[in-house]
Each structure stands twice: as structure tokens, then as C-alpha cells.
Length: 135
Image 1 (cartoon, rainbow, N blue to C red):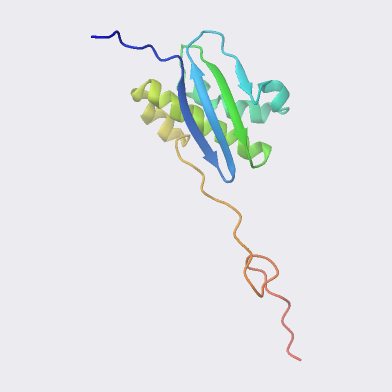
Image 2 (image 1 turned 180 degrees about the horizontal axis):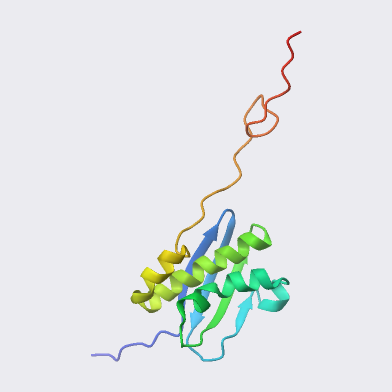
């Protein structure tokens, strides 16, 4: 019987609108966030976006430090931050199934499916019609 392989990392995908984030968390003990080969503070300039990315760790009060590596594509900066949050939450539930209830209650496991509606023929935008004139 061969020995059980130790997983180096846990991978999960997070999405929001058109943003997709491939998240890998590893139990190393440093707590480093790397997003598209940049440090998180360089990638997300505002504290609000950085806080959004770290929410699954801070709100679930995990004592273990994880290294987080992310590849994110599409969407705007806010959408990317929420996609990363979704991916981290999914990876944490894979790591520890008991966290699922807490993260679900916070709404971190729900994918936000809202996206821009397509433009319809004969209209100016998705729902905006040309101005109506009686004569």
C-alpha cells in the first residue's frame, strides 16, 4: 500500500459577473497574498478592496495562516476582489467542512450572477427605448 500523499495546496475557483479567480491556498504559516504575481497591496490600492479579499479569514477567525496565490481575469477591480473572496471561501470549505455554515451565513459562498443585460434590437440600450413622439 502506498503512503497517502500530502496536498501541497487547495485550489478553488471564484466568480462574480465576468471576473474569474483561480485561488490556491497553502498551509505555510506566512499569510502572504499574491495576486497575478503581485503583492496584494500593489494589486488592490484601496483598503476596502484588500479588506474584501481578506474577509473569509478575518470573519471566520481561523488561527492557521495560509499563503494565497491567485490568478484573476476579467471584470473590474471590485468584481475581481469579490471573485477572489468567493474562491478563498470555497477553498476554506474544502480545507475544513465545518467552516461552511459560517461562510454561507456571511454570503461568501454565493456566486453573484448579475451581469450586464444584452442590447435588444430596436432599443438604444438593454431596455431604453427611443423617445416616443405623437407626430
